[in-house]
Structure formats: structure tokens, C-alpha cells
Image (cartoon, rainbow, N blue to C red; front, side):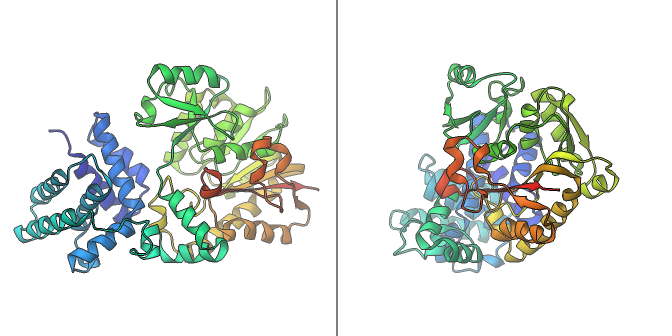
Length: 451
């Protein structure tokens, strides 16, 4: 019997809230486990999960206004089922309210919930449905508390309001609450923009060249799973935001000597750097996490760059301790809070705490200090995060420079395409913010070793 998309959405939301696993990972695991082949069902699962996470604070406000029962005392199944149902009622016009309500009751009954609970849920959802035209939407600031309508946690809103002001904070949150388009980076060894766009057109997919990153393509509308897109198996592209695509360009022309990627992850920037290497050059990619290391190799193989890259399945500390050589170019795309990619990973806003920033900062500083001795004289080290927060960005660089007088900031401007140079600030740092750039939030610093 086919799995109900609503059941799967509720399960993913519950697991994410309870065990902290990334929603993307849970989504992929659950869709694979349940063999959900119908693309419409897959899209519904993703729309429900990401929609609930984006608007969770507003949904909870509506729920609290009608439930008269503390949300924190609700069982996880009940709470997530209600959020999914209310999201359908208030945000998904194509789904009849009756279907959203009836399916929710069936799910709770199938989970052997008591009759009084299903009766309570049924009455509550029908009351919300009856009032939905009178309910203020999240953008109605005069009727909905400002913070509720923006659907971000207080601590983050307070920081951003202090830094950016009220209006810019609202625009940033609105950007985070808007589903972003799918962005691809083309593999220049196997295709070009014109040929790939023609391939997508033949498949009925609407797409256009990206406005900023040279090899980027922006896809619009309803799409199949990434692995079902034309050209995926043939290694014609990687999924990657335009902001992330600009960071490897900060090196400028790469030298013939080896390049080090100290925090390779799944290989988004690793594969990009591999495509930019001059003939005969090699790249060393450090990735200690076993599953990420496997995915890294898979991506390098799919794109045809695995022979150019040596994968080191240990941490940077171990590698740096044993390394006997220096590199003319080092990329350090460090682990971070991810607060710059909330629009693609909406669960991040609810999982991060203010205290996390100091923890990430300590880790980032440690990694930067480990990488510094590996950089050759006159070499370039690019430090990057997908965070908007100064503690993980400028503060890390400033502290590093205080203790490493033989390093200095080299402005990012000259190496970027002219259209992208507006994203370099007066200090020479590269920075994108969703509401100002239309891209995810990234930071990068270009450091030069004068030794």
C-alpha cells in the first residue's frame, strides 16, 4: 500500500525535532525507504515539511489561539500532525480543507490515538478552517506580532535588528521564508550553458543562466528529484548556490602546485576547484566523516574528477600533524552555524542557539590555526562560511591576524567577475545576504602569507 505523503511528512518532522538529524538527510532516507516513486507525492512531502519549518512560529501562534492547551504539553505526533494540517489549510489552496482535516484524523486513528484526541483535533481544525478568511496572515503586522509573522526565533531577530535595522531584518526573514530556486553549477568539461539549457528545454524544464556565477543555471517551477534531472548521471552538473560558486573563484588562476581543501564535505567546492585545476595539478581533500567521504568520492567520480583528487579520510588535525609539505593554495570552508542558508535548510533557525556561535568560533579558529603552517610563502588561503554572523566571520579573521603577523587580507574584488564585485565590502571580505543578493548567505576572506 502506498505511503501517505502526510504520514511521511509528520514522521520526518518528528524525527528532525527529536534527534537533530538534517532534514535533507531524513527526507532522502525516508523517501528511499518507502520507495515513494510518484513525483507528485514526493513534492507534497517536501512542500509540507519545508513549509511547516518555515512558518512554524506562525502556525504555532494560530494553533495556540484555538487550542487553549499548552503546545509544550502536546505529544510530538499530535503537534506535528496539527502543524501539517494547519499549513495545508492556510497555505495550500489546491488542497481542500476537508481533505487536510480528514487525512489528519485518519493518521491519528491509524496510530491508535484515543477517540477524545481525534475529536479534539477534528474540532480544532474545523474551527480554523471556518475562520481562515478572517485569520490575519503572517505579513499583517498590525494584527500578528512582528516576530510571529517573521517566524524566526527571538534571539536571532534581536541580533539582526541591532545590526541591520527593522526593515532590513524583515526583508531578510521574508527571503528566508521564500522557497529558493534550484541552482546548478555546470561541469565545463562535459557541457556548456547553451547545450544544457537545450537539454532542459527538451525535458520541459524552465531554466535560465544565473545572473552572477559564470557556470550557473537557475531552474524554475515543479521539478523532479535532482538525480532524475537530465544530465545528472552523466555528471553535467552539481547542485550549488551561486554564492557558493563564487568562493573558489577567489583564488584567481590556480598554480600548478597542489591545492588543499581542508574541510571538503560533500564536495561542492572540491569538485569546482578540481574543474579549475591546471593540467597535471592535484588537489588534496580532507574529510573525516565516513558518509560524507563516500559522497565526496561519488560526486568526484560522477563529474569525472576523481583522478585529480586525493581524499584524506581523517581530520585536518591529524593530516596537518603528519604533513611534510606546503600548499600554494588552501580552501578552508569551515563547519559553521549555517545561519546563512536558512532559506534552504529552514530547520536551522529552530535548532541554533546564541551559545552555539562561541562553540563554532572556537572550532573555526582552531582549524584556521591548523591550516596556517601548511600554506606556502606567498600562498593564498580562502576562509569561508555559510553564516551571516560576525563571530564566525570577521572575528575569526581578526583574531587570527592578531596572532599571525605574516598573514594579511587580500581584497576579494580582483578575482571575481565584475558583476559579483558588489559583494565585496570595504574590508575586502566577500559577503552575500539573501535579501540583498538573491543568494544564500556566505562569507569569505582571502588571506595571503607574506613569509
